[in-house]
Image 1: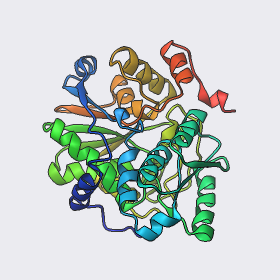
Image 2: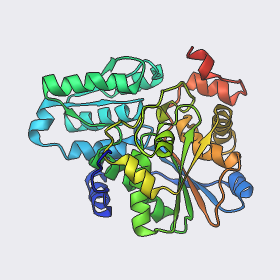
Image 3: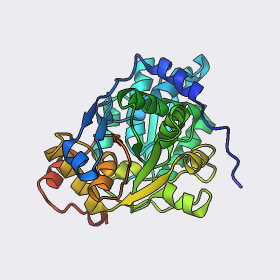
Image 4: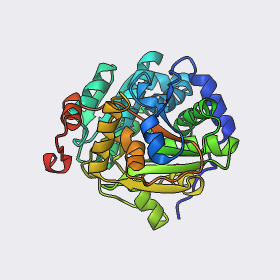
Length: 334
């Protein structure tokens, strides 16, 4: 049985909010008239894709880098990423003058690799999955003494992501249901910990893709299990949660009220809706809340907030999707 650490507390999230205040951007919330009519209650979109590096990941990465000792700063940081964590960590590390290496699998889109390199980090492409890329991270920690900053299962990362929950409650204090993209669980653990501590009655719903939804499979199994990583439009939601998961599995299991899965076609429809109806450019992983709303899978007695978690999509792919093309990444990745 996997032993977990004590859950990240509201106090830790409050500390994170203070630590990263000068580094991150407070992102806006827009009401969506179209989605509100569809849901029968007000629907608000938390535009976290407008964060400085294009996703929420900057929050956790900035908090983790801020907590490093002088010795750790000197040796540098390393992490595995499907794209957005790497970009956030690279940005935070460069701002702090810290060397950064990001290890990624061959499934990561080139646009996300280029975005990380543009932030000054070294990128190493290793293997066909996030778990295989993690082996290179482990080697750099063991041999070079670098500090690993993982994408989700880390107290400082979770506390940093939790600041989004506090910010959201300030902006929509009457929120009844919050839709959170679900992958390794760092975002949903932090957001749920923050919101449930302030307003325990708020429903937290995790949204993931049907193809390779690791946390969903682990929750069904009652423990962390290996899940095959598959090509998907929601590529940032790919990757396992780690068989030795210490925090996010238990926090997601205990704090999240429901999990909803959406199909590739529904993700594409959400990207199109975001562009044509909401005037927002979002990636597949950031669109899953909209996808669940469009598919009428969400019921709420009061206002809904959907977190649009990232906008780092390949713009050629985005153009094809919004133009109505049937973009099948499952075939293109074959």
